[in-house]
Image (cartoon, rainbow, N blue to C red; front, side, top):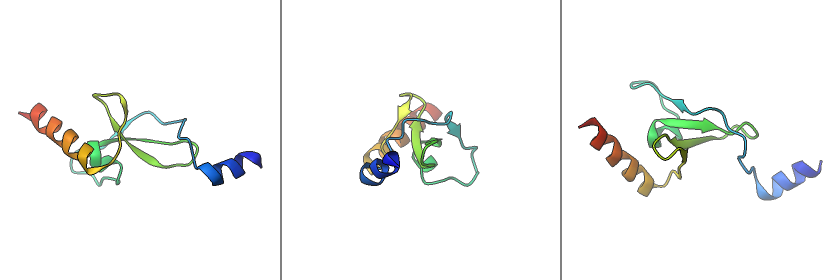
Length: 78
């Protein structure tokens, strides 16, 4: 009961994740996968979070990071 009250006040801490999932090209993408093509899922609340394999961490889905990751992808493809 106390955990539910803390979760309602502060939200999920996202401390337990799945292994990173990479979407195949041409597949339908979730909102989290549009950032880098890879995402993880919080096992506590079910939220999908963008993941960057190069940095090996969860990334913020702001437009600035989208441009940074997009530019990395085009550099690697060349």
